[in-house]
Amino acid sequence: MSELLRLDNVACIRGDRLLFENLSFALGRGDALWLRGPNGAGTSSLIRLVAGLLRPAAGTVERRERIALIDEASALDTELPLRRALDFWARVDTVDGHTVDRAMDEMALAPLAEVPVSMLSTGQRKRAAIVRVIASGAPIWLLDEPANGMDDAAQARLVAAIAKHRSNGGAVLLASHFALGIPDLAELDMGALA
Image 1 (spheres, rainbow, N blue to C red):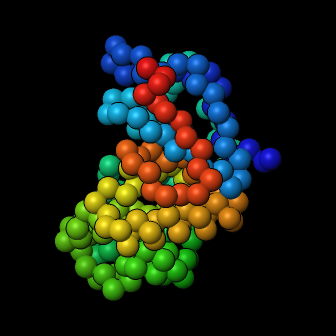
Image 2: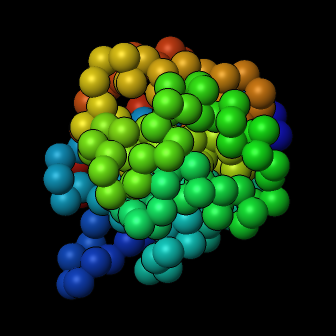
């Protein structure tokens, strides 16, 4: 197995509280790991550690490929039309417009290309964030509550995008309060680590 991501004996402290310690796992091509647990269990903190936005209190995080992150912020300029906001990230990720078009089609957002991001619903913003992740071409997806605000059809598109990414050799680290029906999904109960 070709490892894309490895954590060795990682600990996380937020404020004065130890969220978890001695956490080790690896993700290889095609792997997906569901981080689950109650609020405050550390799922979002773990995603942020893997993304490099937080430093571990102990242990090491090794990313062997590029990452793409979805968290509570969509990271899209709310004043711009959706397509222009996505094009900004396409330039950052050095991908062409056709890649963005295909990702918009995958998430059924092409009809909203000229709508300002500020006018999109919560679910549409989440789908737009997924478009950004798909178009990035990053092998490692870090998805923190990616289905929040999505209806059943949008969730099905998300699950299909994850399946396609995995079949192309990508890996997914997913934090969610509910199962999304993703096949062959390993689970880590963060609540049991506290």
